[in-house]
Length: 419
Image (cartoon, one colour):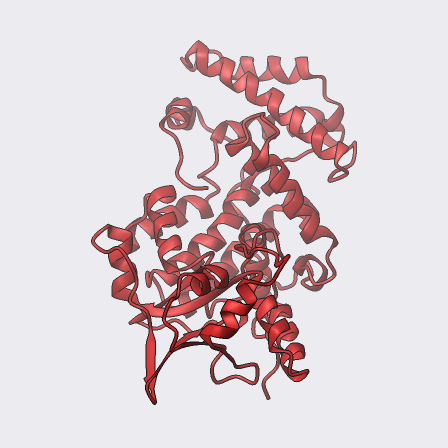
């Protein structure tokens, strides 16, 4: 029996049940819809050899029909077709074909069709709120897992899913926008244009080796020095310990100064997290590995969309990312703090700008909304958790050998892919 997969389809079902197509269209018009288009068109757009998708038109009885769907009704991936995302408002206002009908969610109990005149009436409504691409929204599908190992792994990628306004708990459709946007994201942000490159980047993420290595050196050192009272460790002690460690490793002076600045940023962001009531006064972040594990989940989903792996392999990898997170952190709260600090250190760089605000907002959504996986999916939800590389390193001042330290700052200077 059909059930509305997300809250959006539930709203559409209620409107259609009332026979209120005007309200139905207003609901659709607030966000985006998806069109099924040839994968060859999407690939041509990504590589620059094409300019537009072919509209998937149907012709019946002298009329043209354009089928679109809402986010909960996205189709299973196949080899020949992909999904293109567009605002309903843009599709409607740019369409001048008077004989064309738009059909939303064809073949479902919430199917609805809109003629050119119906769309024009909606477009001319006074005070009509403009459409937009949905962001900063928790979307759960009833067709995906909400408990168990796979759900836990998917939930580790929920920060990006929420910020992009897409379903967090699905591998049936994996987009964080649409096919073209995701392939461009892999290419431009990650340098990924092949299955081999995708696999290599996943390896870095699974080893928590995509974030700035200086962060982990500093965080490990602080915990070693301060123990349970690491939050009260004098900055001077922390700084001097780092300089002692760095002495004799032929590290350039400017790199040393950058790392001392990074130490200051860590303290400033943790103080801001406390002001925002994300963390308490005696908490500190011990590792930002969660930032890599969370991004790994989304890189896996994009890789599935790119056909770099099949669904079964993607689900195994997503589960593994969840296991690594469980081995490194003790709760969703700890995991999110590690993810948040990793992200702001990577992109906000002490500005306390939009990246910082977005990170806090995403954390707040996941921490407070009743449908959040942090509420429905227990931490340590399955056994046989493999130890993560960061967690399994031996105790000591810094979990890094002298050989690793030689390339430490050179790697920082070379830059790291990702978003």
